[in-house]
Length: 557
Image (cartoon, rainbow, N blue to C red; front, side, top):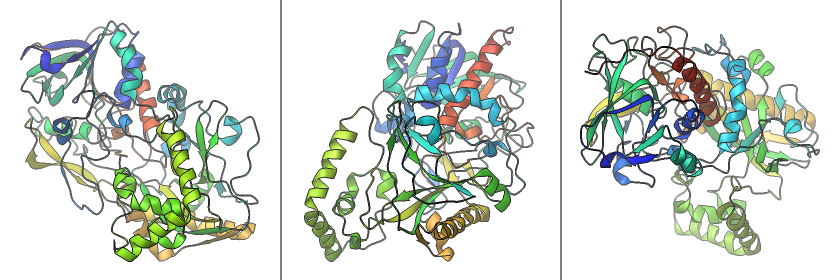
């Protein structure tokens, strides 16, 4: 059943066995998994089905350094489906090494192992519609594939691990019919949680305070509450709920909002190959788009004492018309129509003078057949296809590429979210993000680049040239990688090291649980969505076990 909180009588309490806050990827995946559990499940969503300016404005906040972090209301969607309404669909699991405590990565180590999460990844893959749980080329393909880089050999780098791509699936649109038909399930739209009210002894959640922008207010009471509102909002809700604990819920050790990670990402260098290369997408036997990457293998990470880093072959810099490619120039001229994450990389580096514009326009006209063919491909395989071609792939006639790098961030307690003095339309304090990176973040990428340059030359397949002194600049040119909000309510065995325990339950609060990337102790190299969904499914199983136990007494005061 799907209802609108604005249609409820003001002040009328809502009750459930389990209340999930946030109808994004994780909240919807957990709800789907709990539909046949016998539990009365209530899913609260702040927005509606379509974008709404008022709801989206609730995400606004401030950043310590605008050059290092995007505005807080970008990369997030406050509506049914959450950020799956705008994601690119890139899906991959974390690597086993990401769960390990590594003495060269400060504050690393999960209280669970990869083996504890592995059983949930295949189900997460199915829900995300990312195909089979097969992330090596020899697992995903029955046919032989041409090598990514013909003749390339390395003891430290692999070229056969995959990233798989969802349709990309909008979880709200895809699974709405299942949620509507479920008898013990309610989705409440326009229901904004403004506070977590604890029992007088501070040991459990008594109720949630919920409000709508239209002025309705009411409490929600449940045996168990799950916050699945995203890496930023989970922390904000805990910090803003200060009625019993002045520092916020779960924040006795001043850890909520700390260890804020995204990913290090940037484009660097020039790879010129003398052998054939393949940097595009392969279609797996199940129809899923897959792409191979260059990855620093775990043994090399340990020997070099660096974090997890991968890289993709990328087209030359779009902003420079000297590439003489009509498609790249067309993308530059149409940058105002490109999604924010990509468009921001096209502004500010080259003056928008008439000669520059004219050279880009000439590239488009001179390469009109290629540009027209690309436009048809974009319309057919991306705009009109149900399973969309994931991104722009440009074959280089000169066999020349740049390197698109994606690296792990070291957990840093000084990189954090706090509440600022401003309040939103519902009276909640807004967030301030102070994202920071460490020397280890840059050192890890620098080490990977050095290995790649060495092994490309040693294999006789070409050259990789870059300025080692520019690595820090290139990896922070665009700041934190948008949309990957990680680590702000981290998982740890002890409340002195983290906010939630190994079961994602807030330390000291048996009926409050957190789901999503906010609980990740480390970021790994992988996009967080698939692991967030898998971890949410693991939590759903735990909640089913708890449901079989005698109910926890919840105050009705």
